[in-house]
Length: 102
Image 1 (cartoon, rainbow, N blue to C red):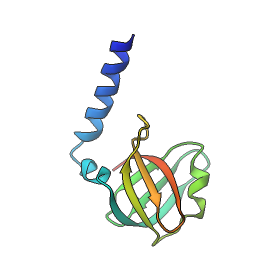
Image 2: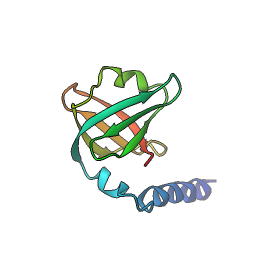
Image 3: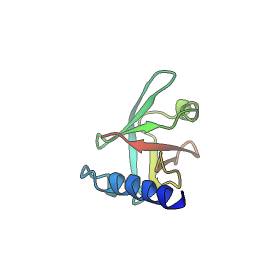
Image 4: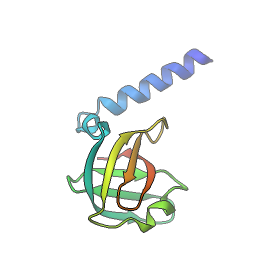
């Protein structure tokens, strides 16, 4: 069972870093401005100034409601397997877990 879980984790990690869309660069603690936040009750998306989009983890989306266009966020690696990127809002002193969309 542990071997199966380890293989699944490695597959997800490899997929995340091998997408070829610059994802690996977005986990190296860079700072960007928020372009906009969109979505409904179940799915929310945050778009950064370079056009990259991230899906906000469910039940965390409400944290981002006070975030606004132009605020600066630091992009970091998260320990969460499914939402492996952490966006830390420097201006709002808050952070959320997201996953790369495009």
